Length: 342
Ligand code: SF4
Image (cartoon, rainbow, N blue to C red; front, side, top):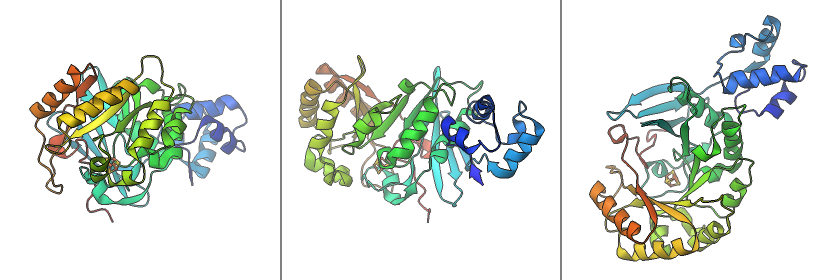
């Protein structure tokens, strides 16, 4: 049965044409799905009983099965979802003062193989469908009471979002539609290793999200070591594309820097960051590497990340250090993985 989650208003109008003649009825159904998290057509009390029955006989509103919710000591919650084909993904709700951040997955596994990331170790299974991306947001919104759209959506969960570009773009359209999930595009960030050609394409949608690029090293060879997929996507091409992006007034591109001791924490990197900042408006987000027994690096201490950030700041560059969250439940950056996934 066709799942209506993940469909745009236009698509719903087409799909429901044989059942619903009045456009305002379709808008009501759209509203029930994206604003009121309806799980069944029978909840849609504005519709006649007969219409609800016919919709129920022909369509579904299908969410992935929430297999587990794992709470962290610091308030984060990791969600484990089982998809219709049995594959599993994770999402994370990160509560903060005055807002919540949702870390959303776009693929089952990932092909990019970054050596500091457990998802990369899983290998690639498949892209998520639009409804599977959007459902994560809808389910996590249910945990935010009263339903509060002042949430930040970060596509930093499992997978390389730009490797699933068309589904990502459609999901963002639904997430940012004021009649849909209604989250401001300024609160949506896509984190990518920067596949050339995709940045421009993403910025062309009606309400483009913010972009964060995992740079991690501005030395080509070192970057290729850390992120083997970048052997195909050269750093110079990524930088060229960054330079050519039309940014909103005052907007800066976030450079993500997973800081790993003795790998990418040297003065030479600070110098390169400084040079880049003279060409492109950037802000740097330093992410202390999170330890995993399955990966070959030492845990980066907060004080080392702070020191690195301080050196960047002294160059007049805006910089933040990402606070570790959900480390005790393996929900921090680079720790999401379904290792036993077949
Ligand atoms: S860091 Fe992102 S792109 Fe790299 S392997 Fe992990 S999920 Fe994939």
